[in-house]
Image (cartoon, rainbow, N blue to C red; front, side):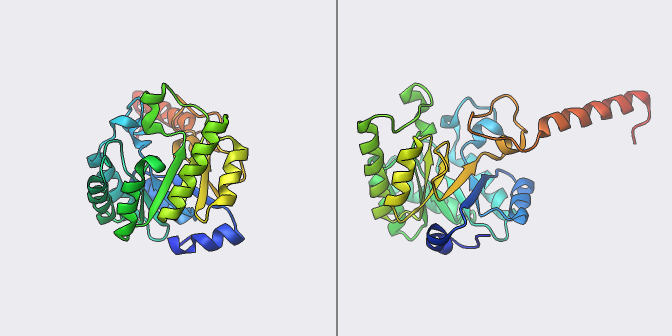
Length: 256
């Protein structure tokens, strides 16, 4: 079990692979921490799986501050990574100010999407002493610009851009980077190229770790599940069963 981001280089070299899950509230975060998860991500996926938004672009800093604080109150051991939401890092000054706000909630690191295009913002964060996690490949905050969620690394141009992003983030001092929806062979190449720990999601098995949205893992958000996400429970069905049992007992006059 990871207890500090300082342990990441050793885990990259010697294993085991990093297990990462998302949390958005106190009870979920506490359960993940007590179960031994390595890293907890307060992801902007909260917009869809908690707030019912169509994508992550509607998530605000106020939402991320609220959820990050709730998670950090629960966690005793695992480092907590907080997502910087859409339009919260449009300049180095804005990125640094908002990163500081998330760290003040108790986060161990912040994460933003993009590589070379946001290098100035990344450097501002790192130079302030804030641990930084990158995110390259498919970028959910750019879904409207790109017209959907698309696999990355299929063309030589895409591969070159991904490698440039990975190198730039690594040289800027990222301690880790999420590789989302990247062709597995390219994700493996990036993993061997950078000193930072790579955390894959829909990017094959050769990264330094894996991250999943916890409702996908638990089967608690049945209306949509990515094809790469294996549900290991069916909380939606169990919730429906328990609620219907309660309704029946209330109506029969036997509920207490």
